[in-house]
Each structure stands twice: as C-alpha cells, then as structure tokens.
Length: 58
Image 1 (cartoon, rainbow, N blue to C red):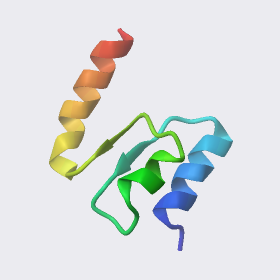
Image 2: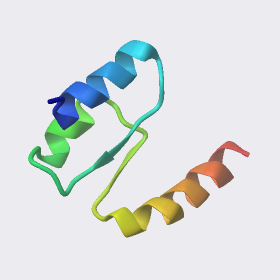
Image 3: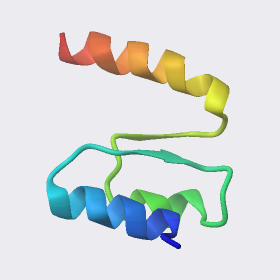
C-alpha cells in the first residue's frame, strides 16, 4: 500500500502537480518536503482551494 509520502514522491517523479492533505498519518512539515502545490486540512476545503488555484493561474 502506498503511503502519502510515496504518492507525493511519485507525483514529483512524474512531473505532475499534487495537493497534500493534513488529516493523515504524516505531519504537514513532512508532506511539504515533497513540494505539493498546497495542503488542506479537510476534504471540504478542496473545492475552495481549487477555485483559488484556478484564479491564480488564469
């Protein structure tokens, strides 16, 4: 089973963007080592984060 760290590292290796979630096993600091575009604390925050991200790149 892939851990969050492994998933974020695979995204980096593939050259894709990622978004971390802080409600799992690993600390935010550890997740941020893999350079996700952001980190949310709740699933309910993802739509707002996506809207904000979309506005930033438009």
